[in-house]
Length: 203
Image (cartoon, rainbow, N blue to C red; front, side, top):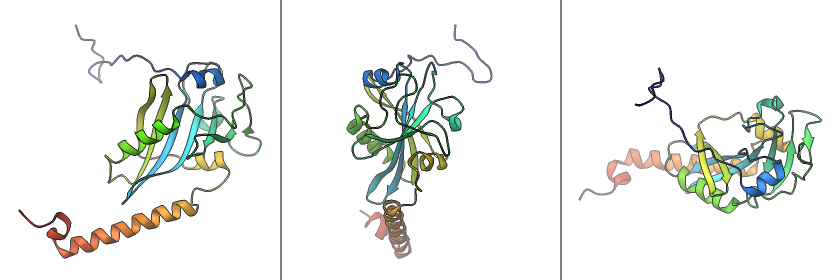
């Protein structure tokens, strides 16, 4: 007999994900620590601008940070190499940490496992939402490989800036936004020229 749970008309039970062995060794737990990947969809394709790692601490089962309320850490990740370059345990002055609070193992310098596969996965799926120019993907790094958890349409952009200690509007982002603007202007010109310019001649 189906289990009924109003107002959701049932419940879904799934096998829980666990952390990749390299992450479990660093954190001392199998709880999943997701990577947030911030993607801008430009005319030439998706561009990953920023990534940060939500690191579980102690017995926490979730990687939520909530401005340091739960004791978890956040780490800036070099997008090209998948290496942690800076980490914090709280927002503001005095929040920076070098090592994991539970295990004492180095956070800074840690290379995330399967990073190239995770980046390739995010670039692949983000193409399916071309109208959503800013995408925030949460990716779990698991023994079976990278697993997509969710796509956030909005994100608290103060957080990645607090982790890195610098603003998001850098030269790279300016280039991305300029490319998007040029693509929009080109599309508008084509639309004004008529449907054949956009869709091609009718068969």
